[in-house]
Image (cartoon, rainbow, N blue to C red; front, side, top):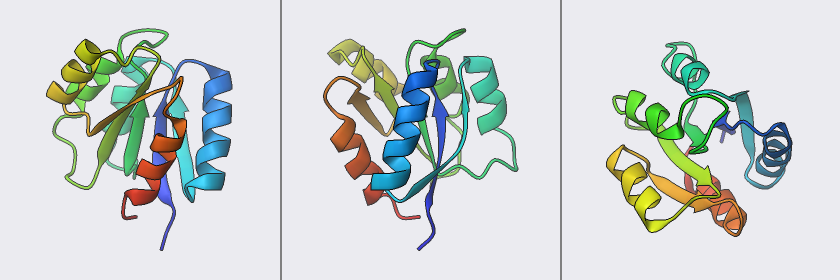
Length: 124
């Protein structure tokens, strides 16, 4: 089985570094890229040669919003999943993310293990 290919959309370099290490060690994943703005994410995730299977997106980015990223990726391949990983996983944010096409939403403060389990559950 090949490694799950993950693209991170996160504006905190510390979180990118820590999440990359966690997912690569515990979820048998490979983080194939990361960016900090909505425009960069939209461009990268919609490139035909960017073979991501899971995009993990924060809601609040350096520029733009993770909601913009979800909306721009609504026509992705069926095997491509999008998860939101945010400190602002309120009921309202969760509903908005699902409406825009998020497959799952995780709270950064207490659902890291659930995110790892979700990554493990995706067939790669």
